[in-house]
Image (cartoon, rainbow, N blue to C red):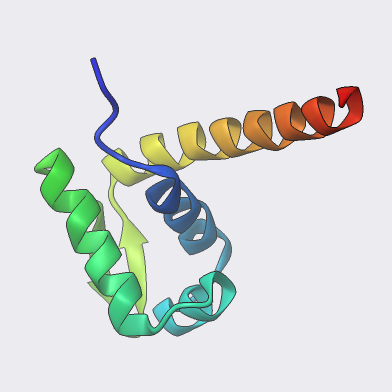
Length: 90
């Protein structure tokens, strides 16, 4: 089975968990808030589920988003470690 989300979506989940607002998350990812919203909708469309609920200027993660965010954190950590090892072995 092929994953439906890509690295950009995993980074998005991770940053949204670490920031308070969409604008703050967009700045951290170096995209516009509009581009960030499009990326969220794309992930939701690919999975056919809702990941976030609007809360004022921020977003509240659904239980599905919380599951995916935890996985994203592990995957991004493992990838960073693998890159460090690969660079060190070259």
